[in-house]
Image 1 (cartoon, rainbow, N blue to C red):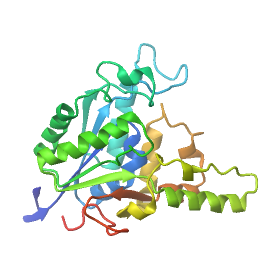
Image 2: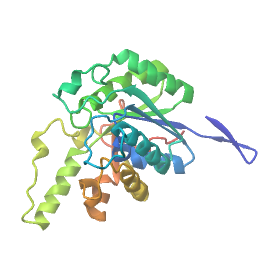
Image 3: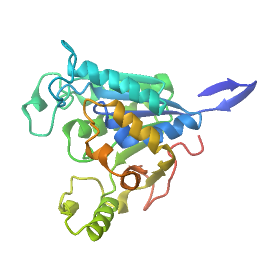
Image 4: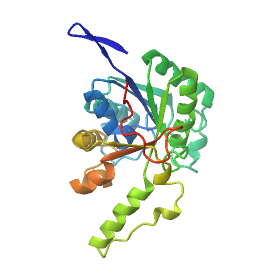
Amino acid sequence: MLSVKAGNFVIMATLVTFHAHPDDECIACGGVMRKAFEEGHRVVLVVATRGEVGEVDDGFLDDGEELWERRVAETHEAAEILGAKRVEFLGYHDSGMMGEPTNDAAGSFWTADVEEAAQKLAAILREEQAEVLTVYDDNGGYGHPDHIQVHRVGVRAAEIAGTPRVYQSTMNRDHMIRGMEAHAERDPNFEMPDIRERENFGKPESIITAAVDVTAFLKHKRTAMRAHASQISEESFFLAMPDDAFAYSFGTEWFIREGQGPGITETDLLAGL
């Protein structure tokens, strides 16, 4: 994308980041979104569903307010914090966790025709002339049906639109294990969950190709999480942990890009653009 600033042509890139539900964006890609914004790039957020089947405490919503209405408003607030200049919802219904009856409900994202959904996303990619798209890895990070569908739809949309860079957001399983082992050494009462056996949880470090240091943007990332108050309370895992633990867990955002590697070969999704 070309823009004019002070009489000079300035080259900017457009990052489109595609997510399943409201709040996913700040957890998975909040740092790279704010980083791109501060570096002068255009950031566009696309969300497949409005998070209709999320859980919310009794009395949290206003009289007559639907959860999806609150979650849409929260998404716009978080997007402003993270620097997204455009927010779009594809209009599918939240499918819920894998195996739930909501997976098969009419209009759910999980049952959506991949080609049809990809055409919707591709239209945005073309309109924005996007150079970079983020999706999820092939198992959606942890096996959620809507996250898996984001991968399928996003990869196909990039093919249709000719988007040159596609990054699969993931979790670094080895990094998480190292952090829990270190915590267990400090706290003998800590019961370490064994995620080594959970092959659907994140990806091994050996196949991750991009690691983006977003520690400079953790304040924005955490503030964006707070904007999603219907789903992320102050007592939640995300907000209750100490700053150093939060920095370890969320200070690097991890991605896989086909054709890169082996090992970490990129530290900036928009390098050279």
